[in-house]
Every structure is written in C-alpha cells, then in structure tokens.
Length: 498
Image (tube, rainbow, N blue to C red; front, side, top):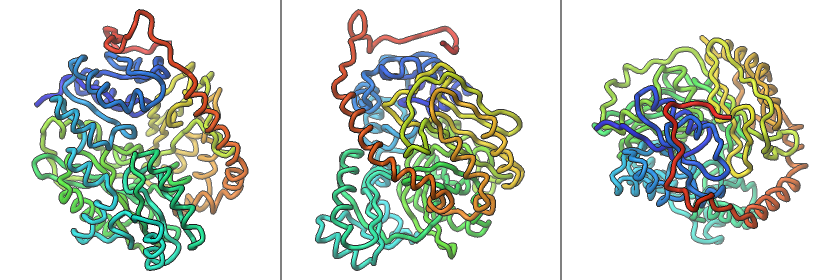
C-alpha cells in the first residue's frame, strides 16, 4: 500500500515537520487550519489547505467528523495526527479507519489499552515490568483514596487515568491536602480529557524522567531506539531533553529497552511510541506510562541514531516491515533539545501572544531548528505556546552543551517574550553540565524563577479567566460567500507567503 496524499490533522511545528517528511517521500500534503491559523506556516507550506472552523480547538482541531470529511473531500488516503489534539484519541483513529483512511499511528485498540493509565499499569504488571506502587484502578471516592494513600504512604501522586501532559496531576504530601487535591485533579482531568477518573501512586523523591522510543511494525518487528532524558520540567511540562541520558549506561539502556518492547508487544502496538519511566537515585527504573504518538522531543533520538522517525511512521503505516533489528540500531554522540515557547518565565510563565517583528534562528554545524513561525507571524492566544525546538548534536555531551550555549545566544525573537533566557541559565548551570538532573531541577537551581512564578500565579489565573471570557463572547464571522469549509487554498508549488 502506498500513501499518495496525507492530511496533517494538526498545526504548528509538528505539522511543518510532517509536511517536510512527506515532501521528501513524494507524498502530497493537505493542511487544515482554524480561523486563527489562516496565515500559519504549516498552511503556507502544504500543497493544499482547508479551513475547519473557528479558533476554539473544540470546534476545529478536535472536530473528528470535520477532519475526516476534509480528508475525504481532498482525496487524501492517510491522516497523520501529530502530537496533542487527537493524536491519542482512539475514536479519531477508528473514524479514520472506518472512512478507509490510513491512520499514521497505532491501532485504536492499542491507543485504548495504553491511553487508560491504570490499564497500562496492569499490562506492565502482567509483563513483569517494574512500576511505582499504586492503584491499578481509579479511586471511586474520597474515602477510598484516603485509605489507599495511607496504605501507600505519603507523599503520593494523584494522576488522571486518561490523557497525559501533566494535566490532572497533583502531589499530596500529607492527608490534610488530599481532599482539595482530589477535587482539583478531577476537575482538570475532566476538562482536559472528558474523564475525571484519577488513581494514586507513591511519589518518588526527585526522580529522573527517562523515556524509551520504540518502533513496531505490523509484522511483529519491535525495536527500541534508546532513551531520552526529560527531567527538566516545569509543572510536568518538559523544557529541555537530551539523548542519551547521562545517568544511563549500556546495561541499563538494554534492560529498559527490553521492558519497553515487552510492553509494546503486549499492547499489540504498531508505529512509533514512547514508554516512559521514572529512574530513582539508585538507578532503579519504574514504568510510568506509554505515549501512543510521536513525542515533541523525537528529534534528539533522530540525531543520535540517524533514523528519521516521521519517515519510519509513514513506512510502517504503509505496511512496510522495519527492515532492521535491534542489533542494527546504534547511537553516536549526544543531542540536546530546548523548547522555545512564547512565555515570560520571569512573569509567572504567562503566555506571550503577539506579532513576531524580528526573528533570527540559530544555525551552523549540527544545529537544527524545528519551527512553526516566521517573521511577521502573529502568535495566537488559543493554543500551545511552543514556537520552535532548537536541537543540537555533538560528538559527546560536553560538546553538545557548548553548541547549545552558542546556539541559544544566536537565537533572536522580537515582539513576544520567550523562554530563551531561562534555557540559557539551565544549560550553563554547573549541575546541568555535571548531569545532576531530576524533575526538581528547576526548583533547585533556579529558585528565583520559581518564586516569581508563585508571585504571578494570581495574575495568570485572572488572565486565563479573561481570555476564556473573550473567547466565549467572540463570534467568528462567516466567510465571504458563505461556508468555505469545502474550499481550499491551492498553489502549484509550495511557497512562503507574507
């Protein structure tokens, strides 16, 4: 089966990344865009682009029937979900299959199996993969949560049974905090994933967050591509990632890789996926969850393995075998990724939408800029704040750090605030260079930024409420000439438009 035309059911830098991968393979691309994204880079780069609704994601990028309908009208034979939005939505994957479209991702059954975090924990248990002690079912009531928390011992983590990305997570240090934490976690999980169920895990003190990239084809082939260190986080959102991890040697990599492949096989997994682990101070690893999609940080794996993950996703979706085994996967050098977001880290990490009036991306040897923006582009307030990912490679970790320091110093964004100043502080910090990393890194080494975040938290809440009010009261105008959702922007060759 050959994929000839693909709809990218996403936006921003990941849509641009997929479009580039398709172009190298001779696959025509179809972009979709909300009213807020009419001039977005992914729209300008695709061979065709179709409007799908107003700025609100629920009425555009999350509208399953609309996306499938556009794919069919455009004559696409495949859909790539990117990450976020509907990337881990089994209903969307099934809708694509029912419409005769190839979904570039795992089968719906695997998404369901691993999307329910408690079900995923049961798969890990059944396959003898170490995991953090916790409940294997969502807690049904506050009383049950109280009993199970006492059994596990404080501190405990509350986690959403569905979804990911840090939403629906709360650290509970003592029993008096539990009731309010349950309320907040359930509310956030319900709003984000449509399911308010939460479960409990014992909290691991200052762990590393280390994940294993896996690839699986439809012919029984499963390999892992090594690990990524993702410990530098703010509120469970990753800021800096690297491969390999400075805490993982060849023996540990092999053991974690075997565990990850075991879980993928048990779930009937096909395509690219990531098995996430916590690593404690003694080097013991514990299964956390599986992300059934391409990860934001996939470029660092590409840089050290030489394997194009988007190309592999498309090959696997087309029914091709991997064509290589675990012994054929090798790693060379070190790669680091910094996420450049439109946020002000010195004002409580408030989003910074607005027009980019000046832009100079870093470049030079072994520097990669995966971006979804351009000079003159207006960053909308409706979506994730990620502007670009800056990735570097070096023959060893020290060289990669030096290159990242240089590249961040070169990067210039004018018109909106970005996370670049904090990223520069992180990669130049002695603890980062020494590899002393954990999920508490930011609080430990940049306490002033953390304190400032707390100081601006009230402002952030007020801003979010006002933004939501504005979204609710604004009616998007109908396109001239009536509904143009079946129409497209087309041009003979891809180009950049101002």
